[in-house]
Image (cartoon, rainbow, N blue to C red; front, side, top):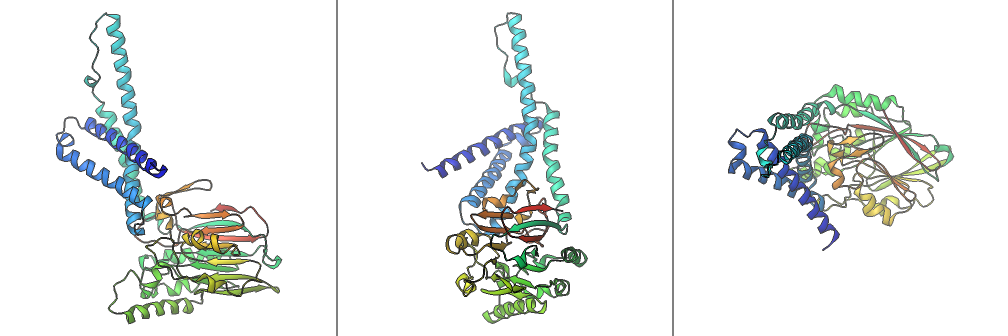
Length: 425
């Protein structure tokens, strides 16, 4: 039996034991009610539990579409949070029952009564069980209430990025990054403008946008083009395309209509003054010294997303450039192509994951269910001399909420040397 198979069996066993334990707790909380003890309740309880476990395993070990994975992982996580919040009350009640049982045994031994007490005769505390269920419901309610509040709660993350071969003229330069605007999901222009003003207040020397300007239709930018046209920088704004920018998820009456939509989206980048890199590069010159900015179309290691990138074309004629920075929307491109084939690329900038818009993120710890799909999903990663930064996105898609993983504006300070670091504000 393989190690992966053993892991799957262990995960299933642990989750089923938790579900069984919780089911007994629910029945203890409502011992006078018929429904929790009925066959129909038991059937649907286990149907939901087994379905969520199956969805979790499929999301981790198979190539489900990202939307379906996100739905399974989010549903599992939310319900699991409720169960975990209920468990301490179950454990306290079991401890209470054990103490009562022990006391009864000692009393019977002292009075020389040989009939042992029956554990099941000691009922669960209805108060503790109902308190536990309430404790399990509170975080779910809090998450539901706070989901919309995080949508426009833009945060600036300050990242020092050390690049060993960085020319002296670029030492200390400020680079801004935003990603995954998804303008078709917005409904608050004032809030969106506020985020853009936060970016501009940082006065970056150059700015990267790493894909997914829209959800699928170029027309989604009509109400927001004026806002994002304000995103300018002295050394330029460089952009790339994401998987949603090709219109692949829309139903088109003809190929001509889809092609026109794509042409309109490319024109939108130009109208905003952004330099869209389609499998090409730019030489950025400061005081006679140069670095290379490369941009490719979408490329994903996952089979459910398109591979339009041609990195060979983008990197052509850049051998003499000492530092190469790559814009590539999907972070799986880093491990799929960049690391094994292109050691000359110093740093890659991505988005795409959104951190699943749900999880925990602090300066020293981060977790989201999306980590079971993407090994690199938020923040800075490094292998040998090559680095990857994954921005968790400016906008949102899938569900109108963000919990714990807030919309991000990243400000990099490029420095020569080693030891990159992050600060959040």
